[in-house]
Length: 123
Image (cartoon, rainbow, N blue to C red; front, side, top):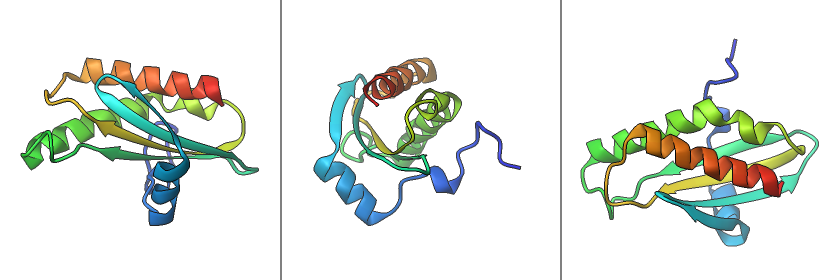
């Protein structure tokens, strides 16, 4: 009964080995306010796993970090179809919020869309 727009646990990047591989050999870029890192490999069973991060360095208070993480997750959840329709690959993606201001949802959603479109073009 999983909806296409849900974000189940299986779509979250949480394996330590996968995270290490992502940051060691992945490609990165920057679309304000996100730094993003992605790693793709061809596979017969395509999957997309994503990691969301809001560093404590810029936002000391947990409630602010949680708010920004929620906004990012929501923006990704609603637009993840952009990277789904493409070549059958295993895609790991990390979205790292790197602005000192808490930006509105609309700005975050636009940035996430641009990141996903950029990655979809490269696949």
